[in-house]
Length: 477
Image (cartoon, rainbow, N blue to C red; front, side, top):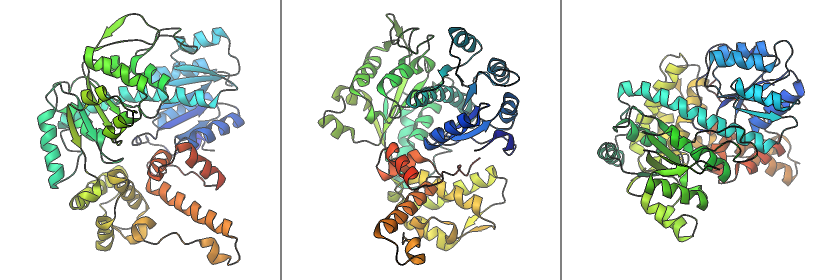
């Protein structure tokens, strides 16, 4: 259990991609532990607090993406604590949880600013879905604030590092395309920086002062994705207690970035196509058309042409999206950029952790350049962050690099200590070491690890539970 009252002071940095921090405020230890286990297995970073006052202290010391708040707390109840949270952080999503699910409680919580309301005993899948939607909306708004600050530096290509010929061509293409209204399709393997390209296109466009709204279309079921994109009217479905705007409305006048569009369902593809053609859509359950002015940028690591041939992606939508295509090269095809990326991330993580400058030893740099980087720039970023935090001197040597870079392999430590171990136990030990190593290289981001293993997240989580692998907090706290 990670009690918020014991957490180290100081604001926590936001995590990259899909890993977010959640605070659970509940006076029942069993509830806190149950929720923490569920959310940790889903890849979230979780803190807990046993009462409202401890939760408010945690919110002063840390940054969170969502709060799960019990209604029936000792002392000041959940509605009062919710009011305090709203006074301090008006936009932070709060989901109320209670065993007393009366209509009055629902109305009071929603009036006080709760994002949603879940009754004990809850349904895990519904709770996780509500959390994903709430965080997606919150992050979309927060991205806009951060992006406007970044525009003081003109954003441009400051966060996209590279001097290789393929990257210089991409920089030229982005500079040409950014001022236009055209739809852009960004292709590339996982971890190549597709969202950075989308942000650069927006930041160098006439829409730079309007919202940039990213949404991972591959992380939600169809009904939740459509509710997130198009919004809904009150009563559109069972849990639609009030009307909500969709991200198309949030992005009006600006840019909507549809990440992982290759996994989107055919029904949703048809609705996206209509918005591209007519600039109009309707809320779920609604009857009135809404007109928007939104530039759409899309990205995927899927071969969309093959998906069209396989009948999994609409051909008309493909051609609507593929007005201009930017194909990002994998890191292994631009090895001359590795030293530049290493220096970029060394500088960043030393500054973030208030550490003196670090350098890689020549041997470590050689291994970095020769490695294939299946996780691309994101994997390199995680390796450097790990090395910076774990280093005790100015030099980061081979000993601080993961086994996959150094070639140390996966021989079974169990066999070394127990020559009579069964084949099953030896293979299980090797599997455990492989999964732990991958999680370390992905900075304990289970979603990234599952993607690199080419297995569903649920499959990886089952293996983690079966092998009794302890999920560690990400290095960046």
